[in-house]
Image: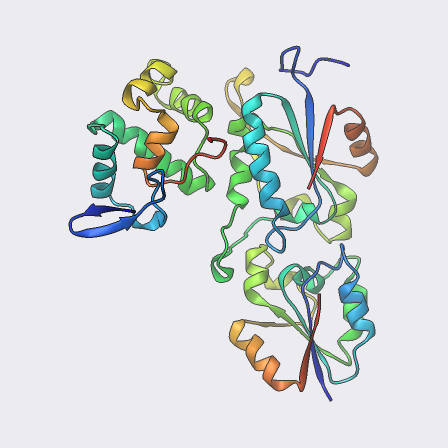
Length: 110
Length: 102
Length: 142
């Protein structure tokens, strides 16, 4: 199972998470987002970039509760809440956004 | 016959290093790998026994396992030689046989 | 049984006891993963580091050359999961020639105190840790 980006293939697991985290590119993120039926805008990108920075620093994808709390601290409560985050990522902000960000499934998600 | 002894257990948790040192002969080598690299530290409750062994046996410790655990060279007992994976292979070749203290 | 501070009436006190060095065995990583998963249940969680477990918090870990993941940065994320009590046993440090300076800085932001950064690591004596264990509802050992 693999995504196709500019003629290259990037392997993913059965749920769509890429297996080699270093193979992520912005182009790949757009491909994954399309599969997830998400049209990436600036706000999506801010969440995706935030997740990548978080992973870079702590080596984990944060649980959704932790993510929303962190977003709230950074951008205020009009963005740091469930409704807003599920509007951006209808199938779960942590799961879907992490997938697009090229991270593993958040620890604690089953 | 010279033996290269390898130990991979923490000296604070298992007696493998202590038992190994008690069974070495002059001219043997002891290579500390994985969690046994803590045995190369100075100022611990196992340091004295390792210190005492170095007059008769060669003491080596695997650098990649030290780095993984955040242990810098200045924390090691004097006289312990840090080797990389290539050095590990050289040691195996240098001694007549190898014994792993699991 | 007293109600846990910061938790509701159903909140229990959980203590995860870590006794193994990282990387040589899988215990340290497994414990950390269970802590992160368990944190979703909003209990009153503490971690204890005794015996070789104190090595889990050593600063400067770099695993590139042994080909396994360096999970030490994840301890610094525990504050985000509201895990803010990391008890490190003084006797275990002493036996290994370690001091608090040899350990990573792990902090949490206190929401009740204007997000002030506070240290999560608390060095305690063996007898203090015995008291901490005695005060738990559930102890999980790794």
